[in-house]
Length: 418
Image 1 (cartoon, rainbow, N blue to C red):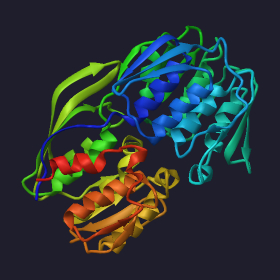
Image 2 (cartoon, rainbow, N blue to C red):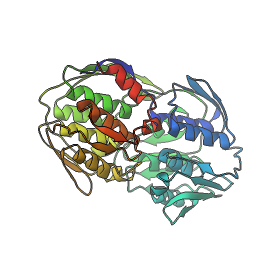
Image 3 (cartoon, one colour):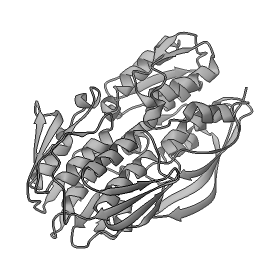
């Protein structure tokens, strides 16, 4: 068994969310080409429709008729963010500063994820947000006036800084955001593309609402976080060689490529180009024997935070000890990904230890047959399906949650497996 062939990746989830939300507050038509249609992105789409934005949908694109902030709609019903943390956190910023009250709710999993990290900086901008038990959804967002300010964020969370930027657009004065380290910059790139008054570096953002956003055509590239599962499979399964076409290669998302360099794996970038401020290219990945163990931490973690589970599986197939550290952010995703990755790989016979902020993994392990559980976390579910390639007798509970981000994952994996 090997992986062979070319695959068009699913569109990027992070960029699709942002195109929907930014398009909804721009003036004129925004055409989103190749959007990801998944449970999470459909949640964002449904809510912008609830907010009075006109949306036209076809299988290949979404057209949004944006009206800016000039005529916001009062919504009495709850805005249900379901399982999407991106939707909830970015909406907290988008709705801050509007003249009406809104209530955000989520499913059982999302309602356990902390929202204070967004509430605090938005409050510094004049936002009025009431959280349940001071920390969780449901969240009431009350009418407020945004006051430009200087914000010092203590977390390298793309969702938090995105919420701040979306709120800051309601003030003509400049808001300055200081960041501890680099994180995904899709929101900065998109706001710039839509005409916002914004300048930014890895650790500093200056933004105001001086200029109105104007609708744009946005092409959504392939999702490198979804690509990571095929990348790891191809690197560790003998005789594999695959091409992943039209992959987003934004430098704030390509931490996994730096891991490939560290372990000595073979990859090439082909046909590199830029569309709507985003780097895109084709990735050629080839099986590489005698891989070296890796250590990741610090500023690299925000660039691969969603790849922690699949990188842990990669570590089990490399001789020597690999270390993942400074990854405490992974504990507050759809599940506690450090704990649940540890539990699953331990059940598969791997030599793995869980630390407060990471994992220590000693390979090489031959995976044992056992019953494992995705804990309804799509990244864990897909990681375990790659593990199942190494031992077909592995059984997975809650194996259908791929649809959160990648509805066709099993089908696409089967196209590559020969």
